[in-house]
Structure formats: C-alpha cells, structure tokens
Amino acid sequence: MIQYNPKDWIIFIFRFHESDTFRRLIPMMIFIGLYAGGIAYLELEFWQLSDKSHVKNIPLMHTTVGFVLSLLLAYRTNTAYERWWEGRKTWGALVNNSRNLALKLSAYLSEESDRNFFRKAIPTYASVLSKHLSNEEVSQMLFQKANELYTSGKITGDQFYIINDELQSFTGICGICERIKNTPIPYSYSAFIKKFIFFYVMTLPFGYVFSLGYYVIPVVVFIFYVLASLELIAEEIEDPFGNDDNDLPTKKIAANIKKHVEELL
Image (cartoon, rainbow, N blue to C red; front, top):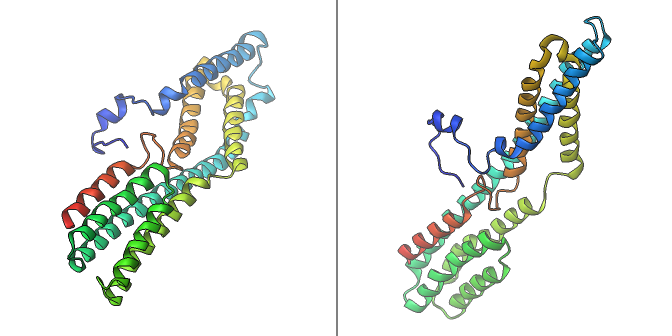
C-alpha cells in the first residue's frame, strides 16, 4: 500500500507511479485520439458535413446517457470502496482481538511453555491469513491448545469462556476475508460498464466535431481517461488482499500483531 501525505497536491498532480491510471491507459488514449482525429477529418474535410446535418444533434443523446453512466460509475466505485473498507475493518478487528487474547492469556498463564506457544501461534494466524487467506489448521491448533489448558486445569472454565470469544472471532475474520476475495463483482455488470464506456466515448466525436473542430481530439481523450480511470480504480480496490499498490498492507499489519503479542506475552 502506498504511503502518502494527502495534503501534498504537487506530488499528486505531477508524480506518476506504476499503478497510475494515466500510464496504464496510454495505449488506449492514443487509439482514441487517432480515432477522434479520423472522424473529425471525415466529417470536416472528406464529407464536408454542414451545421444543418442531423449528426450535429448526437450530443443530445450523450447528455442523457452520460447522466446514467455517471450513476453507474458512482455506484461501481462506492461498491468497490465498501469492499476495501470492510477488509480494513476486518483486519483492524484481528489486531484488537489478538491483543485482547494475548492480554488475557498473559494474566492466566504461568508456565513459560504455554505462553511461548501462544506467543508464536497468534501471530502465525495473522501471517498465514495474510499469505493465503485460508488458515483452518492454525485456527484448529489454537482451539485445541486452549481446550488442553482447560482440561489440564491450567485455566478455569470461566477463563476458557472469556478467551473463547477471541478464538471464535479469528474464524469469523477469516470467513469475511474469504468472502470478499472469492466473491467478485458479477461479470455481466462489470462487462456492461466497460462496453458502456467504450461505445459512449466512441460516439462522442461525431457530434462534437461541429462545435470543437479538431479540438475534439484532446476533449474525447480526456473524457475517456476520466471514465476509464474510475473503472480501473474500482477494479483494483474491490479485491483488497492482493499485491497492488492500493491493496491493504496485510503483511505490515501481521508484523505489528506479532510485535504486540510478543510484548504482551
């Protein structure tokens, strides 16, 4: 995840990093620019269409359709961000529950071997979750060890009941993360938005040529950049558990859990 100062406008405007949408869209922007230039040439020079041509009224369609497209993109972006934020809240809960569990075990356990087990096992859960988002084995190991402490009399039934909530929360957190990762936005919805953006942009030059002339080229390229960038950003953040620049820093969070648990135990 990229660390940045949200108040530094200059860096935002003039810096281009690897995941920047401008860099990723350059090939398509060049193609759109050439396409818009070709349409402008045909209408102005080759066909020599007059201002009375019905083609001039095409922007009326764009006014209505553009409003619908803006609503779709707003919903798409909000949905993707909700998935990203839910993932962040889930990992925040993992941090808190790991601390609480370590804090309680620190008060309950007196034998160093037992404390050492949980000192390693609790951070291992977060580490495995970060790498694979599937850690049933580590979860089962934690439950078995807690039950062993209870059956051997090292902790009381009340103490076992108190730490049981944190142990159960680990499985719930894993389930939430797996649900986010394994349930992408429906294919038909994502494909429709891409097609909508493409055909919307490809029809823009036809009507705006009469009012903008060859300036239609940068205008259409800019509109495509804005619309396509919103879709690319939504694609990237809807799965927050990958290795993209805008994904959650799960490895760093897991390392912090390890540090905190070792301090408490």
